[in-house]
Length: 152
Image (cartoon, rainbow, N blue to C red; front, side):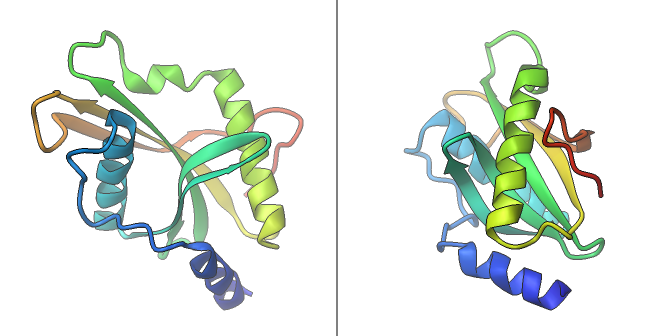
């Protein structure tokens, strides 16, 4: 089942280039590209980005090769002068939307039996820099939330 699940995830990947950061892209896109680079260095395989449907969007979807878990990643990027921590913006309402979108994604890809987790990547970016000022990865940042909960 695992090999078939991985194959379906890889097929859904549409050739997004995650190896470099586009300096002309929007702040949010650059943050997602930086997050993807970080996750790849940690051994995750990025299988989709900006996956959306009628109920919400998931910034990055990855597979942890070691633990065989599908990882849904929310990326929050702040300009360096914006106050607060980027991860604070992933409130309970946002978590519920991400959970619903993740559940629909797993159902669409016929992966409902596969374990999943939710991570958050916080990125701080100074406007004039080519790379982020700071980036933090919070593994298992929140549990599935709302009436569409699922368990790993």
